[in-house]
View 1: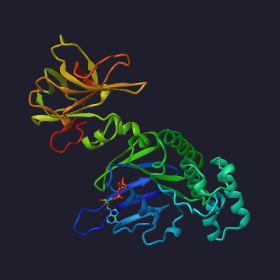
View 2 (view 1 turned 60 degrees about the vertical axis):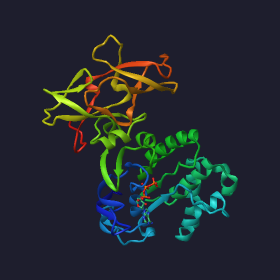
View 3 (view 1 turned 135 degrees about the vertical axis):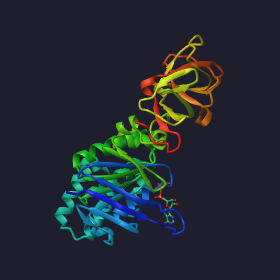
View 4 (view 1 turned 90 degrees about the vertical axis):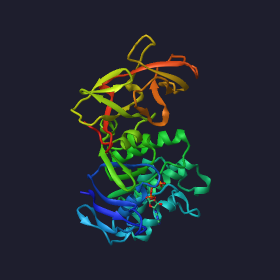
Amino acid sequence: MATVEYLGATRRFDPEAAPAVDSMDLRIDDGEFLVLVGPSGCGKSTSLRMVAGLEPVDEGEIRIAGADVVGKRPRERDVAMVFQSYALYPNMTARQNMAFALENARVPKADITRRVAEASRILQLDDLLDRRPANMSGGQRQRVAMGRAIVREPSVFCMDEPLSNLDAKLRVSTRTEIAALQRRLGVTTIYVTHDQTEAMTMGDRVCVLDKGRVQQVASPQELYERPVNTFVAAFMGSPPVTLIDDVPVESGHAVIGEDRVPLPIKVEAPTVIAGLRPDGWELSSPEDPRALEFEVLLTEWLGSEHFAYAKPCGDLRGASIRGERVIVRIGKKETLSPGAKLYARAISGEVQFFDAVTERNLC
Ligand code: ATP
């Protein structure tokens, strides 16, 4: 069973500074596709490289299939890594690139031929086997890099932003292919990305990191619906959540402008932070005394969805909107020009509430 476990795993590049990976605890199940996601510099690549043996572990343990691998060399770990840069040998053909590690490991020739043929069938590389990387597109090189990992038949795949060199359209189709391939092969996979859409669409579970620390590990749906804190709420979801600080609390209700939204639990604090997804607003009219008034800054039409970005005009009774703008989902046929007024109300069941000090979800 190729489980991967981080047990208080820490990596500290600079003894004076905060660790790049800080006491990480995480268990990845056999056959699971786990995505590590977070902003630039949060420690994703370092966490991944610690599993592959490309980065030492300063404190704690990393276990693969139950065995501590700290101190083991990369080739002793049965982990295959796929890099953003593909790292193909330019002077070798696709076939030679895939066979190389197996030849070095003295795998019998017949076995190598079988494994390369199988990987190229799965990845539809048959017509490219005799080409060198310079004569391939980015997507084709990426498939060869995947093939090189597959032929090793490892216990674990570690993938570090393998799609970031592809154009937007190819990224979308390739991410579906990788996710389907992983499910077919059933190999435990850790996949690093900074792209939350990639994380949401590919992972069985997603681990959100910030400043070297695990914030939340959950299914994509749970992360979206029940983020543990404002960081996760703001990071997951596109367009992002709107956070409203210093929302007054009055007898079990959050006061958003002239509206009163019931709080799901008893709150002693004088204020809370409210979080609203773009579809957490209900469009209203100037006649509605409980609606908030906004001025449209721009609209974003994505074909299947339509969003308005707008700044608040009315009195928020001491509350303030982070970034000074809300994002509201509007009807597909809605025509709102910049400068137009927009009236909207929070849909009570759709508001998330966070502690004003710890910023943790109150539910
Ligand atoms: P990105 O999305 O930008 O690739 P990341 O989340 O993968 O970022 P890491 O590359 O793991 O982040 O880096 C985590 C932290 O460790 C960063 O502050 C980075 O500057 C630091 N770091 C990474 N590698 C080294 C190194 N070899 N020496 C010193 N500091 C490093």
